[in-house]
Each structure stands twice: as structure tokens, then as C-alpha cells.
Amino acid sequence: MAIEHILGMRRLTRAVAFSLAAGGLALPLAGVAADAPAAVTQDLYENGGVEHWLPKAESGELFAQYVLGHMYCNGKKVEQDYAEGMRWYRAAADAGFAPSELAVGTLYFEGRGIERDVAEAARWFKRAADKGYARAQSNLAALYLGGDGIEPDYDRALHWYREAAAQGHLVARYNLAMMYAHGLGVDEPDYVAAYGLLSPMVENGHRAADELMQSFLGEMDQAELVAARDLSRTLREQDRMLVALDQRAAQR
Image (cartoon, rainbow, N blue to C red; front, side, top):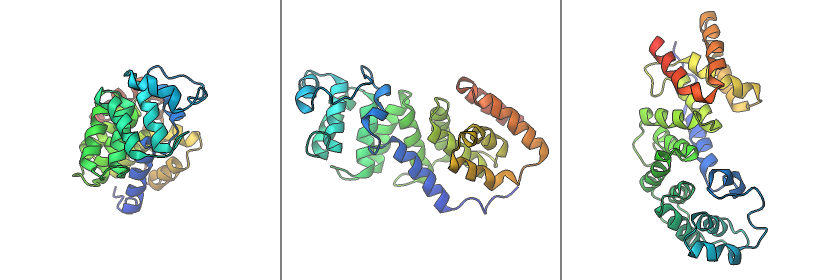
């Protein structure tokens, strides 16, 4: 079942941009605080700005270094300074702090405060991805999917989207479904897997997921729809996602 009419550079570019935006500096620090050790739910700046976090950062506290990096890069209670932000992000990243590794990679990707270097961005994303950091896994997958400065590699993109989606990362789940629907990284399009991944998102009002599903729904026969609905029920359980997708692939 051909779907050449579905896949175009506009959709692919949107998918890549969607993925990278979800892991970049556009998100407020509060959006990633739960991912960071020693993070707390209250306002990270309620106790003050640089004067509160600098002593902690200078003493080697990784989360404090990360916070300072965010403050300088986003102009939070301090004049925006990407170079200084990179310095503090890099201090924590060099020590293996995954959120900072993601941030350093993002700065390299965007060319903020440093010359743009997509290969270097990929290297930092990979460091965090290897630690199981879902947002970095999704960003790394997006680089391999889009080929922006690095050689496109659909197999690696599929792998990292799977890893991130299995942790509940919705951007990765959407783009993983997109890859299955377009036959990227797999032998041929798999509408059943794509439907199974998208269905819970559509039920929750995810517009892009609904548009993607509608683009191939008419290509599915009744048996495929039944299989897709069954798979969808399994894929709602994050801890069963990768096994279920592997079983689906083995059945084809």
C-alpha cells in the first residue's frame, strides 16, 4: 500500500522541529525539574538568583550549575549571556549530568553562544541518551531522522524514538508512529503499529496525532483495524511497549 502522497519534506521537517523543540531551551526549567536530582517543586528562584545558586555551583553541586546555566541562557534574574550559560552547563555536563548534557547539545545545535556544530550536538545528546534521558533520546532521533548536518540514519532514529517513547515521551511516540506510517527504518509501512501508538494520543485531543492517523486510516482493511485496536490497548502500558512492538514486527 503506497503512501507517497503522505510523506513530504514539510511533514518530515515539522516532525523533526517538533522533536527538537521539546528538548531545547524553549522549555522553562520547571518543565525539566522533575528529571534532575535534588530538584524541588517550588519556584527555583524564590530564594534569590545568582547569589543563591552561585556558592552551591562553585562547591560542585551539579544541579546548581545546571540552574545557573539556565538562568544565563534564558535571562532569569540575570542579564542573558549564552557564553556564561554554556560555561555552567558544561561544568555539570562534564561531570555526566544528563540534563546539562542535553542543554549543551542544544546550544551547539542552535549555535547560541558558540559556533553551530550539529555533530557536536549529536555527541552530547548521545551522552545523555545513553543514560536513559528520554528528551535527549528524542532529540538524537530527530537529528538522525532529519539529517541536518549529520548523515540520516532511519534505523538509529527508530531506535532512539522507541527508547524515548517507552518512557512516556509523547513527542517521541508521535514521531515513532510517523516513522512506522511512512515505512522509515522498517521494511514497509506498518499502519497497525502507527495506529496503536497514535490512538491514545488522539483520544486525548492531540491534533497532530489525529491528522497523521487520518492520513493513512483509509488504507487499512478491517483485519488491520482490529489488530490495531488490540495493539493500542497493549501500548497504553509503557512497560510493555517495546515487547509489543517487537512482537508485532515478528508477526509480519
